[in-house]
Every structure is written in C-alpha cells, then in structure tokens.
Length: 134
Image 1 (tube, rainbow, N blue to C red):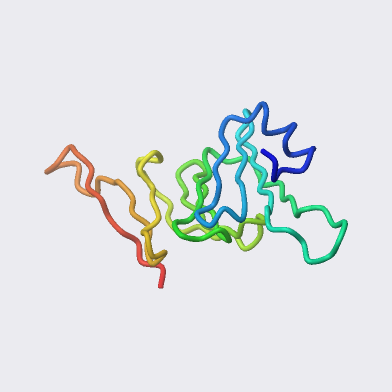
Image 2: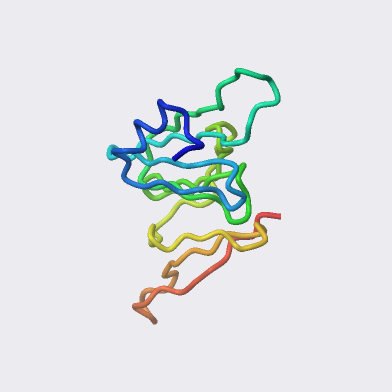
C-alpha cells in the first residue's frame, strides 16, 4: 500500500480485488461495481509527478495478461478482449459461449487458453482450447 498514491489507497480500501502485474510495476484494482483502475507504480523520471492512473470501463472481469504489465484480458458478456493497461487499443479476441472463469494467458504470452464445448452432442463436458496470438 505504500506505493499507492493517497487517492488510490483510499479506493483500494473498498476494492473487490487488488492484483499486481507480474513485474510489480502496475496494480489492477477492481471496484465493487466491476469498474477497474490501473495505477503505474514505477517512479516517474520527472520529479513531483503523480503516478499514472487509468480508469477502465466496466467489465465482468479483468486479469493481467501472463508475464506482461502492459496488457489486460477483459471478459465482457460473451466476449474475450485484450487491451492495453491504460484502457486503449481494445480488440475482441473471441466471442461465443465459453466459461468466463476459465480464461488464462499462456506463460510466454503467445496464446490464450479457454474452456469451451464445441460439440455438445457427443460430449457434455467442455475442453481446453488455445487461441494463438502471434
């Protein structure tokens, strides 16, 4: 909490979740209304400059992209999106019927793993599939 600005520390007190990026350079704070804030924790090279804080739109969930503090995965309805941690450059990666609690980034950032059932007639259980990103 020492790295947070006073404004962010106040918001973090009532947060639904707080998640640090893999390199501990940024923090993702999810509010109770599912809106999110990302704060850059790196010290600014310019003296007396506040840490950058970005408000993200409301989504069902947010998570850090594996091994990366610059990108987030968001789940909005039946869509999986990837966006920059400042909320820009959002694009829809997948839209369909998937398990929103089983969406993960691959450790090297090359793909996303999702749980989905593409053939409900022959198998009632979902399978894990990957979506290549590179």
